[in-house]
Structures are given as structure tokens and as C-alpha cells.
Amino acid sequence: MAATITATGTWTVAAAPPAYNGGSGVRINNIGGTAYDARTSSQKGTNLFDELNQFITLMAAAEGVPAICVMDQLMVMLGDLRRQPAMGERVYAP
Image 1 (spheres, rainbow, N blue to C red):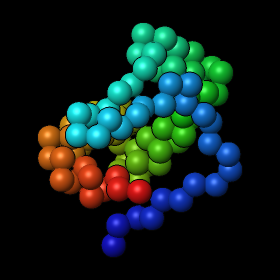
Image 2: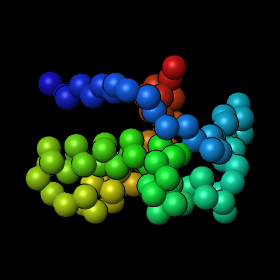
Image 3: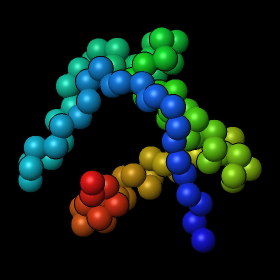
């Protein structure tokens, strides 16, 4: 059985949250700003980087691999979900 991941506490707020634009994709504002800057966001505890780092740490511990392996694995997995829109919609449906 797959692991169940739960969250407690207050999540940080994304300064530039993405927005779904119907069938035309996702709009992400402030790409060049600090909202998606890992160093700045981690230092300030903003933009969901703390939560993302905790998730990466959990996966790395479960797999017994360094965090960089998990980051690359997630990039490949997320890329595949994006290439298969029906899978992405099924997984991320509210």
C-alpha cells in the first residue's frame, strides 16, 4: 500500500500562486521575482519552500537516497504527469 502523507500546522503562503486558465494552461506570475527563488524563500520561510523541502526530505529518507536524487526523480515524474493531462487532472482534481 502506498504511504499516506498528511500535513499539520500552517502552510506558508505563495507570493505568486499559479492560476489555472481553463484549457489554456497555467499562469504563473513573478517568475523572475523572489517568489520562486529557493534561497530567498528558504531564508525567509516563505513561498512553500519549507514545505517542499520537508517533502523532499521525507522521500529521501524513505528511499535511502540523497535529496538531489529525489529532486531529479520528482522532476521526471511531474514532467510525465504534465505530458499526460488526463493523469494530471485525475491526480490533482480538487
